[in-house]
Length: 442
Image (cartoon, rainbow, N blue to C red; front, side, top):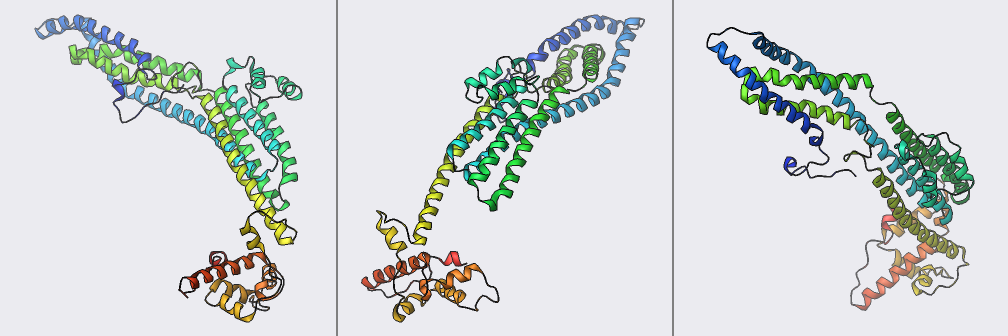
């Protein structure tokens, strides 16, 4: 599990697990102990030379190590910073790829929940999405492939029989082939749902969006496997480690002639910086290592994405059902064959007057109402500025204009008459200046 922390706190006094200290403390204490011993060796030689004595070979070795240590500092700093920058970029790229799989799975769930009408078909497509995600998460751990298919069957993500046999025939589960098969099953089922539930006018856009998400998810999962199967070359990492170890072991010889007893804490700092950054880079080589406390929590990725998809699909699918019911009810009333409902407001709203309005009622209702006046002007023949469309034809057939029937505009009239009656009963003759459908007209 990934170790979390608060950056504003003093981390050096709060955290040990998940840091580099468990990796470097042995080397730090070794170099400090070595520096302490060399101080006892060099101090008598230094006093002898200071008193006019002869410079021995050991004296020259200490000073030559000092010069060599200063010369190597720039070179080791350069190769170590280049290594850490490369490894960190690779580490963050793997995190982005995992986020792409999780994020696009959720995006696809939103699209499916909004357009697929059959709940059983929607659940089946979500199962395929989660199966592919689970195969992606498990593919990063080659040691955890034993019993994986049986675990997926127990979790309800994989069905016994044809699906189990198809994945069992794959040469290895630590590849992109099994998850590509799962995405293929998802695409086949989505094609059938697209033809059954989605209007033809939306086929192209919806198919492009979902298929684009599937391609991104499959490509991101395959790239994760590619990064893990192609690590930083061993020769480079090996040479870097040799150079850093030699450098920190030479630090006591290089610092003792300069600092003497202060070389002991100085060696601790040098070892912590150079050897510590090398250990940090090595830890980032595989962010999926189950033995690393700072590794990615793939189980959290998997379960978090699954729960998010469940919540989104439940909410969006319910909203889609309510919208479909309202659309169906409006369609029935518009066709004149709707059943009488229990709510009085539905009957009043959808009631169509059998006779056109008289002049007085029409004038009182329309005066001061810019929206209805605008509808009247648009509905008149030849008032479309040379543009003939179905909308103009529908409006010209409105009962507000004396022909045909339109429940929407009838509802506008009923609401205005009720509001006017209420105002007159309270001694106010002020007319409403804004129509309930002014926003719609605009």
